Image (cartoon, rainbow, N blue to C red; front, top):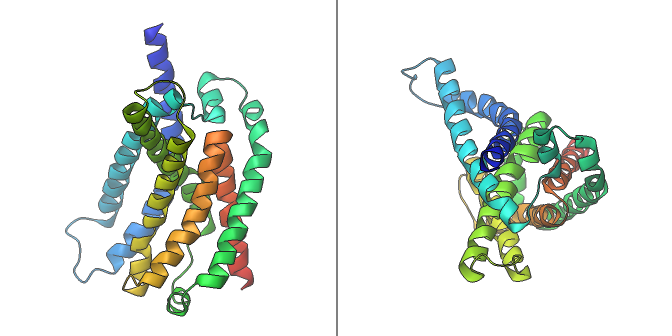
Length: 256
């Protein structure tokens, strides 16, 4: 029985890890050559070697994070029903059926809230700097943002954070308390927002308070929605919401 459970966890991990890689690869292939092109001195290694090395390191790091999520999520009631069905060989569509509507509603709410925050709070300096930056291609937004980021921030960070709180303050007994769940949701949302600050600095050259608040709020609002979906419905609902969020933002940018 124990060996069967280990095999199942390994298959589950591999399914999640493979789902994570396409978005990670797209981001690496997009950003690494661009970053190298901005260097003043030539690299000692061919570009292809550098890109593949970056991709390998990213894959290993993401694999470690997803593995931590596999070890912790199920113990605290966090699920990825469609990925679990894929690993078990059962119906993925049946596992997705309860998640379509909540995911779509979450994407609409998160996307519209973010656009509203953007209209009200975007600092003029950030708006001007953004006009000189090429927008991230839509496939990267959908695959990296919609799938990879959810695996990293919700499946990994939120799960591990909630598991730690549950183990420390509840001694691993019962289900996680509501307060613990909200701390995990808000904590992972804050990390999600903070993860966008390096990009903010790269396009503005500095981190002024108004721009930091804008980026943290704009990304954090959606991250809270995604965290609630993950807890109440499933990881795939958060992924669906994240993809729809990016489609809404991309459409708004195209029409602007």
